[in-house]
Image (cartoon, rainbow over all chains, first blue to last red; front, side, top):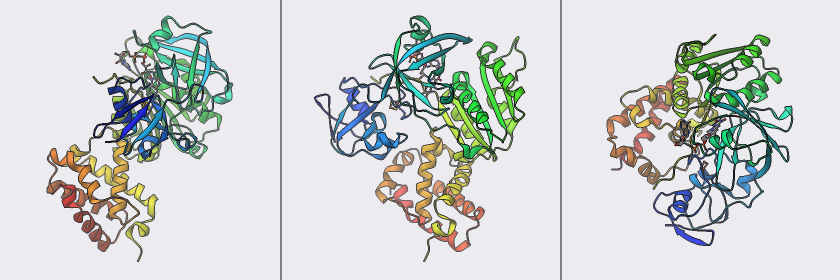
Length: 326
Length: 121
Ligand SMILES: Cc1cc2nc3c(=O)[nH]c(=O)nc-3n(C[C@H](O)[C@H](O)[C@H](O)COP(=O)(O)OP(=O)(O)OC[C@H]3O[C@@H](n4cnc5c(N)ncnc54)[C@H](O)[C@@H]3O)c2cc1C
Ligand code: FES
């Protein structure tokens, strides 16, 4: 079995084990999150050794060329020498400009990075509180609106990141922002396509970016935004989206609430039924699905079976940080 | 002689074939239990590699990969009847794409040639 050299130690991997699993099994500190190749928290740089292709899937070409890899997706086929990327190479320091309630359990976080972040609406970044504690959040802002970055964060009581934001964090506190990742973005080639944007909870954040970017670029096809929440106050952009829909003939907004007591202008069907029944035949639709992993995966399958092309479905499941296996 | 892969239209045609084929497989209760990986993208990529191979396109599949890749499914009961169902869907996919009967027979032949590797025999 291949041996890994990391942080002055030699670690022998077990059959089929990833680099991340092997290093964690030996008690070595490696930042990580989703363990699914999405959040890019586990980025390492290979000094020596062959990098298997799956370990670089989704990385920007510039990073792949410099031998960066995702430890959670790297099953080594020969000995490797690995290191944590040196501080500052991939992360931009940023200051908290604002933390304010948006509705329900959701807060808006605004950051001012020291240097402009290169990103496209619909992408996400990992925000780091310190060397080890990072969580992914989707960008809700547009690069053209200025340098500040906006996020919609659902507060989970006791959550290491979201709980800290809601409780202790203050404007002026500093964070680090990792390079943007993710391929659920709007491209001008889609200008005449019909867009279906479905989000649960804060899954609306990237869609808020995408819908505004599409309109800014003069989108000509239909756009349907469908937002699902547990209670009315979770529809944290209800008024803003209604206003936007009133201003654009090709934009329609639908809201689905699980417990609709006292809500106005919402659909009582569960989000997945609403989506499937409203669209019917998905063969002309380009879909973006964001938020709770179960719903995203289930909808993706239903939409595909209802006629959507595989490459016309873009899904971002907000996977929680996986606890260490012991 | 051109391969079926080229005649169908290369990689773009494969993408279309994967969509049709995968949809058939997912709705077939005889076999969809073997394809219920939540990671649809990874599944689709595997099917793309498989279709590329049976259509005679550029691929790096070896018998060994076929064995390794299906070991866990054989442990879950994968047998000849499931391979038959897959070959049936391959055929109807090709028909929808307008392939000739000889081509369909040839693809079934290639798929059959890896049957023992797939079933780890
Ligand atoms: C690509 C991507 C994009 C994301 N974008 C966003 C975004 O825009 N907005 C946003 O709010 N979040 C987003 N997330 C989720 C986010 O990264 C964190 O997982 C989340 O904020 C919880 O982190 P925490 O440190 O507060 O909680 P943790 O300390 O990690 O967890 C605290 C406890 O809560 C549990 N828990 C974690 N997540 C959930 C959940 N969803 N529901 C119930 N219990 C949970 C954990 O199992 C744990 O027991 C995204 C995730 C990914 C992978
Ligand atoms: S990408 Fe490896 S832990 Fe998320």
